[in-house]
Image 1 (cartoon, rainbow over the protein chains, first blue to last red):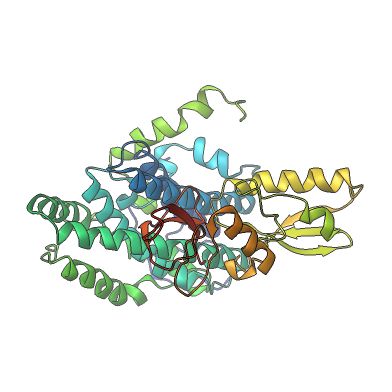
Image 2: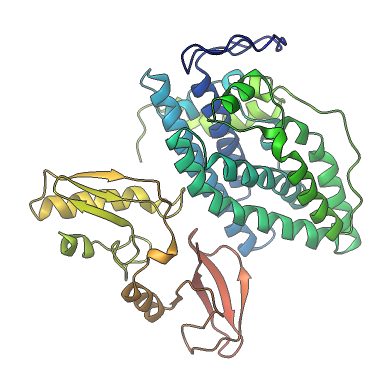
Amino acid sequence: MASLPPIDLPSNATGAGAFDAPAGVEGNPLFEYLLRLGDDSLVLGQRLSEWCGHAPSVEVDLSLANMALDLIGQATLFLDYAGEVEGKGRDGDSLAFHRDVLDFRCCWLVEQPNGDFARTMARQCLFSTWQHLLFGRLAGSADERIAAIAAKAVKEVAYHRELASEWVIRLGDGTEESRRRMADGLDWTWRFVAELFEMDPLAGFMAEKGIGTDLAAFRADYDAAVRAVIEQATLPPPPDQRPILGGRRGHHSEHLGHLLATMQFLPRTYPDARW
Amino acid sequence: MWGVLAAVADPEIPVVSIVDLGIVRAVEPDRVVITPTYTGCPATQVIERDVREALDAAGYRHLRIETALAPAWTTDWITPAGREKLRAYGIAPPGRGPVQCPQCGSSNSREISRFGSTPCKALWRCGDCAEPFDLFKCH
């Protein structure tokens, strides 16, 4: 079911058992938190795999497919764990293929359509830079399993970040057309950055427990890193836009449903299908 | 026991074994611990199945297989023998110095693509013999 918009409550509901839900958090906080991490990776992995066979060159095709593979791998680890935490017999596959749009907890940035190659790279640069900084911190999570997944994945995400940043620079500081497209791509994706740093009650609760992390603490590092890439790309910084929030509570853009329809069709139509 | 596992080839690069690659982390009386190379590496499941089959065939049915994520796999765990096998197969082994062409040994090489045919490899080309080759990425 769709949740209602969040209501700000005083954070005085903590202090009981580690996983008692604080005010403003529905359900099991660890499960919900793992869905956020897993769904970001899953949905972006699915998006990137749409490029398979369509990228500008075979080398780029390989890059995008490999990044998609890394992301699906992260999603499997996070969602399998989420299923165990939930304790209802669901695993990563059933969470990926048998949930509906409103139950997904990914951010808006990852569900946005690929657009042209420049927009895909803008999205990747903005997301991978954030994920790289996030996983670097989650590698020290009080939850050993999250720490292990993050410590492993952060090495791969470093590649994603570097590759996407290099493309932003190359296209921005390229031809007239590539420059225009890169600027358009950044302009399109920029409005979704604020959501990456949203500290809602669940994010705050997990940070307090030492399982998650304070997202605001690395906002300045993120801004500096992205600004440096945009400057090197000789592009003007994208103007601030009204932030769009809601993915973490299941409020998504119209694009996610289309993505899920493609991704979930086969396992839903042939529930017993095996490789 | 290590001998049994050293006979299990990596499904993506069959010239090296899973022991050469540092995928086998521990062999204990009741269990074998393996670790995935890359998070999304599709070979991970095949490796687990191959290990199971090898153990069963050698009479170690009682051993269970565990997968450990931490500490995260690194190319530093590839054995010297494994590195040599990679080179002989035409894949430049991971290293921090200049990348040497596995065909002619020249260091006059450059990256063509950050990602190659598998997540663990990048595509490079030799400037002297002009052959493209895979580089096992330092990870």
